[in-house]
Length: 321
Length: 263
Image 1 (cartoon, chains in turn green, orange):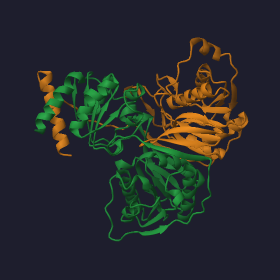
Image 2 (cartoon, rainbow over the protein chains, first blue to last red):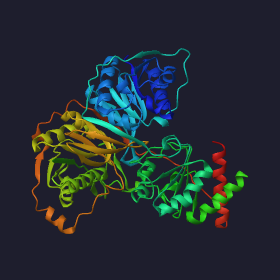
Image 3 (spheres, one colour):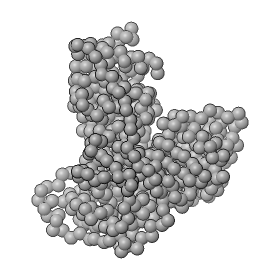
């Protein structure tokens, strides 16, 4: 049985996504009777964390690997994967993983598939379930070439418990040639002041119905503060310039998995719902009782959020006391 | 400078879920009454290219599509938006091509069309959403790839590309040739072509090939769709009850408080 490999970028830490990815891969390896081999790009405490769950950890800790550069990283990962020769290579759905996965598959003469919400192995056959048509349908894809390089909606998967014995850790032996064709020269983190939207437990999101940039600040932000929530927006609101692009949730934005998602002035078109299909609870405020969002809600209220939110905030403040 | 923008025609993703049906035997969506539209990220890519040309002056933009004969509409619209040239590879016998086939067909067409410094695609399509074509095309052409960009500028002999990450953004300096996949941003909302330009676009020359003429090796598969289905998800919404708005808002707030206190 060939092994299962995972690729983790140490710069993200052993966050919810890394834990979900490792958990999914551990279960897949156990079911298949295969070894779980982790590849960590950059050397940090992530290595020790993942060693508690994986059978082996290969660390690409070379100084030139510390800051992600697409061409160099792809080259290094290709070398490591050729060495391991796994049946499947699993990645998370962060920017770097998504950018690199199809190219890695191409170099390994394998097949790639992305945004997987379920992965199964039967013998050497890898099948992946993913949403298509903006979440309106789901497809099961059978990978025809090996390895299967799969990026998963990692936060949706449960973590795996630590094992009794830690996996063996080794440094990757790499032949790295400088590649100046592309170079990331500036990295900017938007100051959300919080963790990533993808990791948020509570999210307050606004859509077209919110109506203005000011309303996001004056009406939605205070609710988010009371609930300890992070802010998000639909594509319509982002395109209108009412909210930054980093807030965008949906098929074309972020895929989030909070415990509670409060949708305000969001109709619930399938493109938006594709981004919140892993949310445990959805609540909505909308003027239209027939809005599709209510079909996905645990609870909701029909009405104008401008009238409702001040009352809701008042009530929540009273409860807090 | 030569820019190539790849565009895909898809079933209108705005079609409501109740009007969306699939053909289980073909494992593909049914066209039904839905319109065919250009994938939005592809239009974002074209818009980004047009703005690049407006700033730098000397760029020439070629639009390329691989799809059914109806994809000509997508290219006519690209010409109306003021792309300089357009080429269509008609898919004559490969329903549901997988991303590797698409990349190989595009690569073959690109080699026929000439030399390009910058090749732009949407980050993914609103139908199957595989999000792989740009990356695979870069590999087929043997050039680097930058994903999720929202603006591109010229800086001396190379490009300065701004791209979105889950944390914020990054600036990538890239030598040419390079493949760049484009995501949406408030600055690259596609322009609406003028009526006159739409009419003019039908008089412009459009290069047309059949995919079978290009002699592309589709290989022995990439992935197969073994099942396609519409998931049944039933959630009952509990609507906040009460005689007045204040009561209803209170009931809603109570549920929010209950739920967040147990988290």
